[in-house]
Image (cartoon, rainbow, N blue to C red; front, side, top):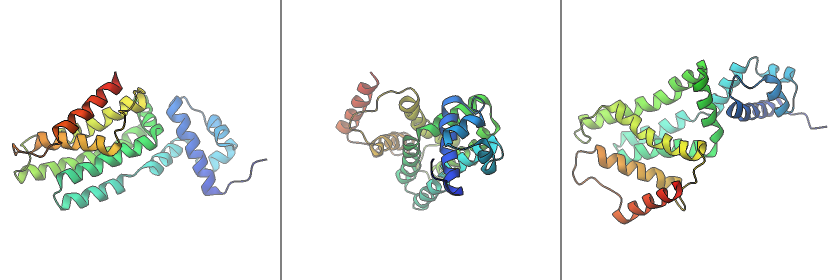
Length: 224
């Protein structure tokens, strides 16, 4: 017979089991009985820790959220008006977080498609905050005369869009990742492309041509 788990550890096991099942079958397609079986406990024990599936879903989002850490580092860079540093902070955190916990992305996609209220809650408390932070920073840099006069929110979403599309290709569609290209190099490429496109200066910094084209070549090869 398996050892009895303490309350905190039991909660963690239940949350991980629920995350796996929600990401595979969706919120509506997963029963509390299935979650309990996967967690190695009874439904009564599950309900003792989480009264409803909604509360369990909320616990997953709370456990997996890293919004404060992301914003903290990015705000530090923003105070220094380090454009690349701001983008690098939010981009690398977002990319690394999903790459280390791909089931979270599947869970969020399932929930959005099911029209679950908590999907909107996650967007409001996490995604929107990132968009608004980066949008506000871009607006400030436009006022400083450093960035081109563009719509700040659209620009912010376009940067995150590069990261999300990259993750969709590899985490959802199963496209092989570029060979010998680290997450840091991927994000640096996105940062360079974005900065070169939005800055006013004609001589904006860019990646060395050979390095840049080599990265694109490896990426194209991986997709093919």
